[in-house]
Length: 219
Image (cartoon, rainbow, N blue to C red; front, side, top):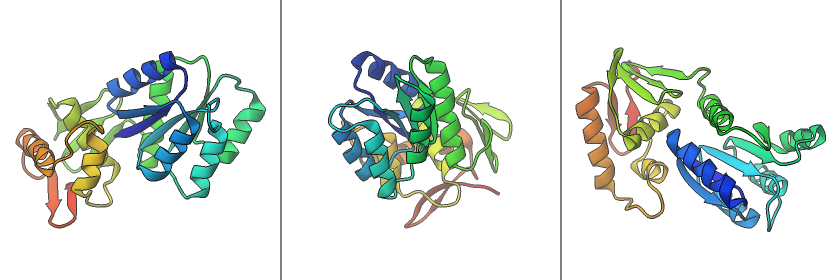
């Protein structure tokens, strides 16, 4: 899962990145409003954590422009002020959730996971499709009830496929959500991860629709 953390305080930004990475997200960050607007408008994210007090362009203006342009990714808004008027304004601008500072990182991660689950049509932490089940709170994987040990990268791939059960996910899209900008986005790297997962999970879990992409078998 791919997340954008928009926060101009370096300490908070580092803590956000660490907490979201530990929760299974591939995190990109910026502390500038103009940069945030451009990234959110041109890249596909599964989650955005957006501080309102930003240089360049304030977070509320960034959010309004995203929504006006049809960008529908879940957005968790952060603010140091936290008045009820500001919360209402943020929600009306298109925020999916609101967290005033100071906050506990554990609460932010829980809210982030809930937003991603809801955006994928899942109500609870346990996600099941066919033989595969994922617990997004524990970041654990099981096949037919038997736990399977996976790497962080393998978990992110499975979590993204589970978020997109209604369609095969193209390799180029998976690569964007799995690897950072400094990593090689090569098709053979993705194929190697898929091959490892198929060995671990067994047959009938990850399918391929030739010319379209990969999917989790639901039957």
